[in-house]
Length: 146
Image (cartoon, rainbow, N blue to C red; front, top):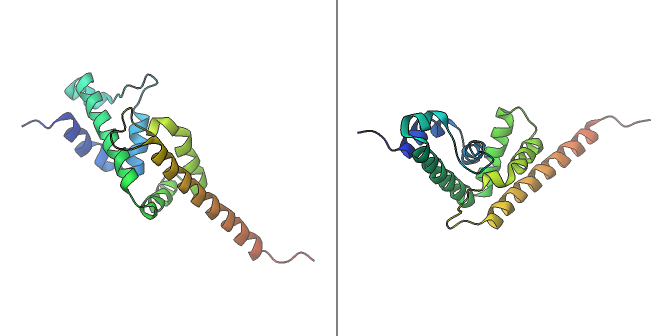
């Protein structure tokens, strides 16, 4: 039996991407400027409409998973993703903020834009505090000026 477009995408593509935020980031990048989703391999195997529907459905499920995740889990994921992208944590969070609305699926079905934005804001604040404390630690470790 042939897998559904959603099962095909999740099994062969999405499962290779670590973390819920990483998956959400990837799905946001599959949205074109007109809001339609496109993944050439999935479209080739299942047709444009079926592929776009599967991506839209998967985007929603990942969005809701982020909203359900504890902040500590998301924070650990942010740190791992930043390392994978070879970026400081605060810069990686800025990249997520730049993706902004593309991270939010067209229909949020039980989730909310405000909740998602507050999660991103909390992660941004954690990154800013971490950056500030790292900067302060670096200053404190320097020998005094005479």
